[in-house]
Length: 490
Image (cartoon, rainbow, N blue to C red):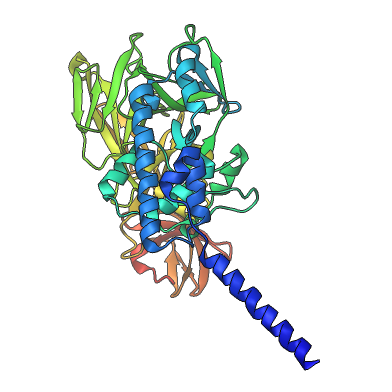
């Protein structure tokens, strides 16, 4: 019996030794031996065997993948051209991309390659809504993991890598979940650039945990004759060398918002005189040009992706088209919107600044004024009334309190003005607090016939003149004006 156990023990040792020798003798293929099977297969081989390479082998393989991708991209762009050379439109109904039959040969070369796809690009700055930027060349979804791993490993010059990434979109996240909200901060330690599979997934990016995120949606392509298509301002997105409309939005059935790509020619009847103007937001020279006749210098902090045109109409029956150019802070947040328009001082047509707003402008459907962030930070274009803007209220000492008022065009000044300042109107407030000490409550803005409001009363602040008075409604049913200087709030 002992002899039998001893034999089994020897067999086990020999078997383990052979298995170890087999594992140690495994030979990994070199890049040059794999690339003949295709770029996609080579990239996949790299990621599948990443843990088996030595550090030197891993670095060599990663560098060669990136250099090969760089060569393929450069050859592609030199032969086919950038995405801006294509004539296309994106259907507003289903996001189908229709390309001109003139581009059919060009597009088929994209479809037949092993590393590029077409995708619609969206940009989500703060999780409240997404902007449609347009069509992009992008890395195929199946290559995202392997190519990004190669980017992590490589020791190639970063400027060279950045230049490569500017030519085609290279997402760093492939998000395939259909019912779980996206979180930019958990997905990557960099700005999230995400590829998705379905348009319905875009709603997963509308939440407070999404910030400065670019999303790419692969699309199906169709070809059509575009010789009879109309100009910009129709209800579909068009693009060619002279057309860069990205998005149109309506309010009450009227088109009031057009978003355009920067650094391309936009044609629009900006002064509503029946003649079309050529408008260019030049982000290389930081200029806004109209017909190359009117040139406005801009700060280097402008949003270099897009600008927009607004159809403005207010309660004073003033109507005009406004060009909006946004300023960004160092984190890419919109902190200011500069407004430009045609006006006619002294009967001479002139194009230039008509004011600015310390906020980004949205349409009402994208703003919830019951949400404190929206109330404090988002301006709203309200057709027929003006632009509803947030304004910092100064009289509450060190508290960050914001009110709302309308920003409307004042023809005498040829500028937009704060209605509350100009016409002595109160700012709208919308916050609650508790009165820590008893305070006098007055029926109007006069210090007479007041009554005492008890301490520890919860109140809602409704309005203020930003000078001395605030109108409040107390939980006990009392309402009226209080002197802000007398308030002690939680």
